[in-house]
Amino acid sequence: MATSSRPKAEIGGGSILLRLLLMAAVWCVATIFVAAVALIFLFRTHVTAQIEEELTSQVIQLASLTEPDGAGSYRLRGQMADPRYGRPLSGWVWQVHRDGQVILQSASLGPLGAGRNALPSPVGAVGSLDSPSGRALSGLARTITPRFSQERLTFVVARPSDGFDAAVAQFRNIVLAVLALFGLGQVATAAWLVRTGLKPLTDLRNWVADVRRGEAHAASVAWPREIRPIAQEIEELESHVDRLVARARGQAADLAHAIKTPLTVLRQIGESAEGPDAEQLCRQNARIGAALDRHLARVRVNGRGKTRVNVGAVVEDLKLALDKTLDLRDIALRLELAENTVVSCDENDLYEIVGNLMDNASKWAAGEILVSTASRNGRVTITVEEDGPGIGPEEVASLLKRGHRADQRQAGHGLGLSIVSELVELYAGTLSIEPSIKGGARMTVALPAAGRED
Image 1 (spheres, rainbow, N blue to C red):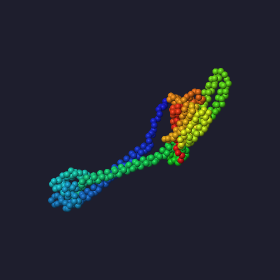
Image 2 (cartoon, rainbow, N blue to C red):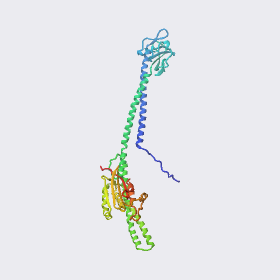
Image 3 (spheres, rainbow, N blue to C red):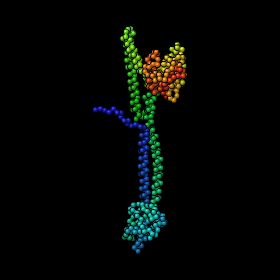
Image 4 (cartoon, rainbow, N blue to C red):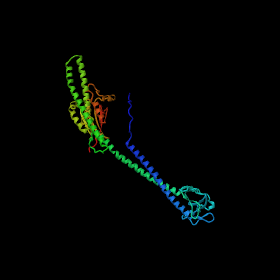
């Protein structure tokens, strides 16, 4: 059965920091919402219980003051303790009902004849009702048999609701404001905690970059318990890659050296023989030798970035090696070297890069070669220019192709610039080739500068 070759969808993409902050914010908002609802509900319940307790006391007082008047009706043998029941339109009212008819009511409701409509307050619990004036009231009713009477009467006591609603609204506003500030503080604290908790990951990333550039060692940091296994795996991976690279380079070099001896014998045989077969043998032997040199050059490409190398020292060392050859051709090699031009790479690789550039310039220079270095914006630039015949724009891309040479009359296999290009790419650098104001070519390599040593 055929299997699908489609790539799997990316899983777990995005930012861990944003994901954790979002979850923390959602949790804080949900917690604060539940807390606000619970607090407001508890406050409302508490205030309602207080009102119920107060109204129940007023009902008991009203019932204790109610007695038969001897003429088939009832009267109050005193006044309610709270004077607001006697103030007209105060909102503090009471009534006494018998069989749904009002037989007594407070002075705040006016004369009895004018207020015979019973207040429809629920019996046994605090409820809302409207006064004759339309004002919202909170009332309580109890059906009680007063003393000296055999009839069951309903006693209704009510008070204005606006004070209760205002207290609840004020409490709600205070709670929401306080919890909102608390929530912002919680989100800010969560953000700080998440950033602090994820900081080892940022440190791990920077450490891996430093290890890659050769500015740190695998066992140079004391990691938290959760990060330590990852760092150990990276250390093992680095050691494993180093071993593989060393082994591959050693095997390639051994193989190349093993082949060189038979090639030498074949070349001698071809040079001593005559005829078309001998010419074909020499050509094929030359092709094998060129391929062998090419692969040996690739074996020399290290790119592991293990040491801090001073570019100026490398350039001066290579100048000493070229001076005698250039003096014979009457070519001046000038240096303009900046300070603090340090890169993190393998020293042999840097010699390979700069050496190939200077060697290439020495082949084409007519009378002068200028090598300059600079350091800016975290990068070190190495520029080599000469006053030779120059190159056209169409030749720039082809020069970087392996085996290509601008002039077939020059010796070599055309590997120098392609090796430079490969090495520069390994170290995350750039190589540019352009015409020089001196008339020849200007080649510039930019490599990341090494960080400062602790």
